[in-house]
Image 1 (spheres, helix red, strand yellow):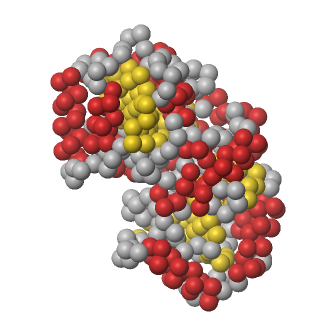
Image 2: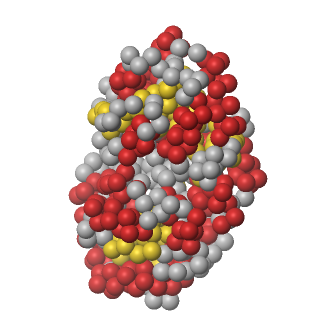
Image 3: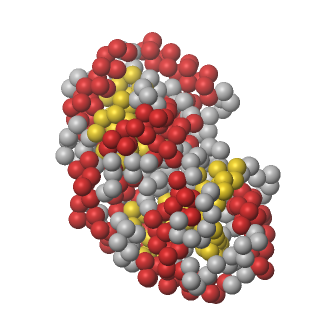
Length: 222
Length: 222
């Protein structure tokens, strides 16, 4: 753990063909034995708190490196840094997503740390990040209860590209008009293969099921 | 009120200079006596519920037309349509924002209804919509309590372009670590001139203050 958080000012990718670049990055990660998870959500859905729980559950099992993408600020990387794993902040300079080339710049900064589980916290946005393959092995997204059960209808691409959907803040469900079954149906409509796991990152509920799922994916890859 | 919601498939603006186009649109609106409000927020922050309340409070005072921008679906326009005002759905076809040219396409569809208050519900996104002047007279955004009081630090541009910030879902504040004073400070850091109004769109709390502010802006313009 370092006292100061490293901040990387990432540059727009020079590669026009992002899909090709993403495939190349995945092949490179496979060869090096590194699993990359791309974590997406709306602003404030609980990405950083979920990550803190995830790191806590898995840091004895894997060598974890976290890349926090943000337009500005290093609030998130500081919080992750406190868990004792390697964390860097990627500044996107106003850009609303990360592509594979930008993700690779972050991974290069983590090189030498011998990590085998890299986690990218993407920019808080349900639109643009869904459009760019980052080169991740798996895509995860967090939908929080206060956002509503209709979000899969309104942000179809995001839900269709995710392997797993974490439904966070289930502790406050009694205070919102949120129908878990309807939400599952809406997700299935967009993506019948998506795994859905209700969690509460604040209390830790559901984190075991989520980290078990993640471990299985990582173990199959590395 | 119409039974079927009109859905407009908007096209990418042909104008490269969006700022110039936005200024031209504002001048046109001034001439026609139409006030345009651009309402932005994260997904699920409560834009449509707030709009429903706003329309309910102001529909006897102004002739209101609402443009609901969405990537897909017409869920929102249907809800607004039920309030009895003119509502159209703008499909952005995957795009994460609206620019002035796209907004004008929507306004053209509302022409002939003799509206004097047009409200644009922008795409749910704290990044991209902030980058494009839509030609609106005023920009408003909704930050909901569950998203957290640190959002002005993480999405600086959005907060800096808004004339008013509505802090929604204050009814659930006891269940979240949300510090209203800290939030106000963070907003002031980004935009000392922003008006901040706590509201609860669900119960109607704070809607009077908000619609009073909006009416003042409209009356000065039309």
